[in-house]
Amino acid sequence: MMRKHYTAAFKTKVVQELFKEEKTLTQLASKYEVHPTQSKEWRARAVEGLPSLFEKQDSTVALQATHEKHVTELYAEIGKLTTQVTWLKKKLQL
Image (cartoon, rainbow, N blue to C red; front, side, top):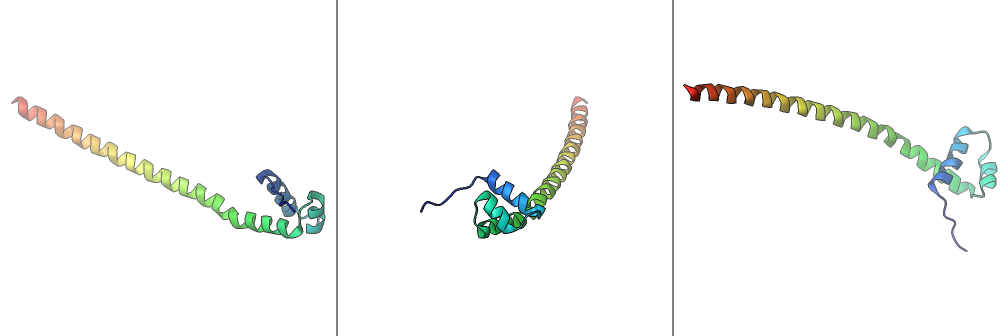
């Protein structure tokens, strides 16, 4: 017997239906022709993966803040070096 392969979109659709809780697991398994155990596994994986969706967003915000701080520090260094170059040019012209 060949194993069925389901697309991510199909799995998502089934899991969304499970989250709605309008039909039983058995009813949805029958509707989508998927074994109830398989549907439960997909739901468990979805619930397990949800926190990572928010962690990625939080890490992106933190990374952006770090980048902005670094850019600010670099601009400060450029200003300091520009001032030093100007001062040296004036000293050498004497």
